[in-house]
Length: 304
Image (cartoon, rainbow, N blue to C red; front, side, top):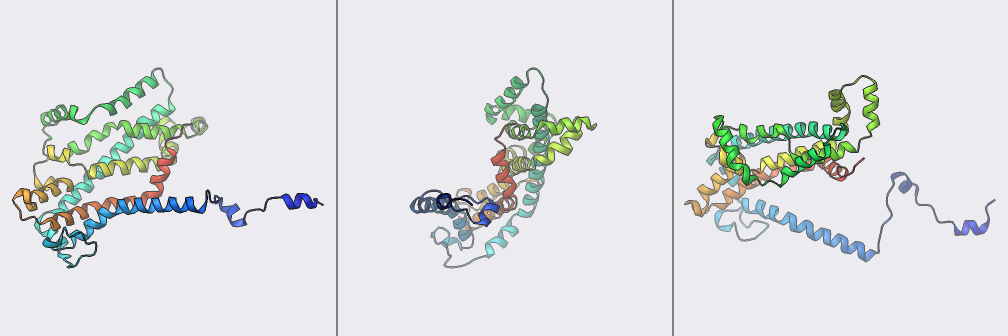
């Protein structure tokens, strides 16, 4: 039998539920944890307030837009129906979806192919070539803006939507780096076993690397979708026809028409309503894929 001394000095075991779930024990004093949650709550309010204010302003009449009331004194939800009547918002919305999905899908797949090559293959000058790829991130977009425009103009593709996504077929240095770090975390033995079973490099990439890298692929897809969705510069440069506009360029058109600087009467409730319409899809997408998003961010920095 164990001695009474050993029984008295033994630490009490944690509850079975915590043992099974792996719950961490609370760290720090009650005051420290209270301060942490207070800071977290304050930052959450700080980031959420602008969007809540925008929703509130979009539901007000013109004379009450800037009264800073989060609960409107006078409700005017007809602002949203008026937005759809005065501008082809649905067409702009569908254009943004079309271009955003194409841009995100092409850059994710092409970057994953290049990243897998850098992670799996061993060849002379691999690190130097990878460093050269990363060096392209240091090149400002303004430096290549005019030469790239001249190329698309020479091809006769200005005032088309191709310049907004076709370049993503060549990958992105940032996503190549992100996905390469994730691929390096996959045990190389899995690929060696697949090679012994007769798989070629493409099937190893498609059947092993791609499924295991799903979180990182989701991160790259969401990043590029968000970047394409909010991009104003490239549509402003390449698009002329209203039917080809994306939401950011359409919002600029609405601002020019209804803002005071554009000769309008300052109908900012219409402008803010259009802004809310363009913002909500990105919030919904992040809410749906946040599990993959956070997992990809947390694991892409490791190196096997």
